[in-house]
Amino acid sequence: MKKLGYVLVVIGVIALLDACHIGGRHTVIVENANGNERRIEYWGHVYFTGDSTGISRISPNGKVKYKNSDFEVIAESDYNGHISYQFNDGEKKKELDNNEKISLARAVRDMMKAGHDK
Image (tube, rainbow, N blue to C red):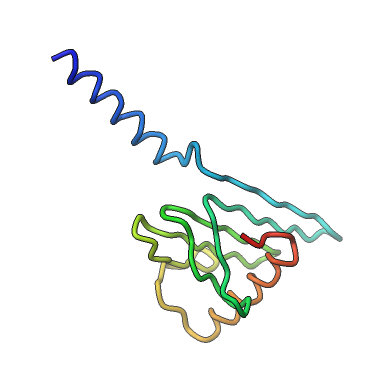
């Protein structure tokens, strides 16, 4: 019975660490220029497409948040690596329309310019 208690404690700690992204990579890039703030925050690893217009992959349970002035996009990966996107506090979606693809491409290029390349 004592052994079962230890196993449950270990499982609980692992679940807590995973849920809080503890032990994973967490990076924040913030720039302020002329009253304009750009903030890039990500957990895990984010990989962009070869043409710098989108996100090709995010490590499982990873996320990237990009905010510049009044535009914000959040892209996050589930445990299986499927990416969902959320623009300006809208609903989460897996497929993007043309305007969203253009906005994402601008954000990706801006993130790369700010030094985020992986």
